[in-house]
Every structure is written in structure tokens, then in C-alpha cells.
Image 1 (cartoon, rainbow, N blue to C red):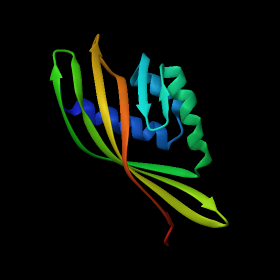
Image 2: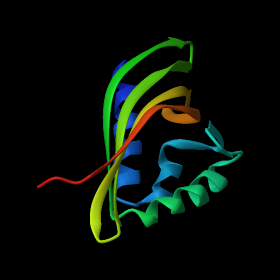
Image 3: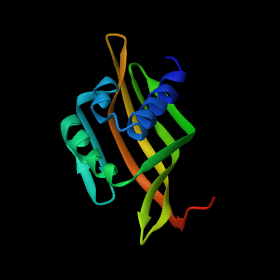
Length: 134
């Protein structure tokens, strides 16, 4: 299998989130997509898209995709993607940035030449909340 597929899917995921194009997740996820994270979960693609609406409380987000490690077994990829997700918001008149170090556990499936996430669980490794500079 093409080793660029997980990287390209992760980049599209980040773009759709940062551009607030949540409905476009259907392009890269199966209808039965699931996600588990700290204090939340989604049992379907539609539930996941609905859950993303909470990001609208931030004036901007920026997901920087980093390392990826994984393997293809026939038509199924399992692996990890590292990311730092920045969330910009205002508190008491001060612009702030909440950063999260995230490790995603990805499962991607190929069907009919299309590659989509079937699950993308996440582990928040660390967070940092600071006033924005500059």
C-alpha cells in the first residue's frame, strides 16, 4: 500500500478541522467511524461531526501533523499520528492559546480504491495554556 495515504488523510483531517469544514469528514471517514478520547466519544461519523461543533468556541485552530508510524495488513492500516493542536480564544480581553500534544491511534481501511478512517482514537499527552505573544 502507498505509505503516503496515512499522511495525506491526516493532513486533510487537520485542514477540515482548521477550516471548520466538518461535513467534509465524510470524504475521509466511513459512516461507522468511531472515536474515543478523554471524556468524550463518538459511535458514528454523524456523531463525530456533531461533536466537532464545540471547536467553534475558538477563533482559530491550527493542527501541526508530525510523526507517523504504522503498518498495512492487506487493506487495513493501523498506526499512530502525532500532532500539536493549537486553539486560539479570548479570556478577560486577552488572546490565549491552548496547545495540546496529541497521539492519534489510527485505523484506515481501503475499499474500492478509497481510503478512509474507520477509527481515530486520541490520547492527549499534554496541554499548555498561555497568553498569545506578538
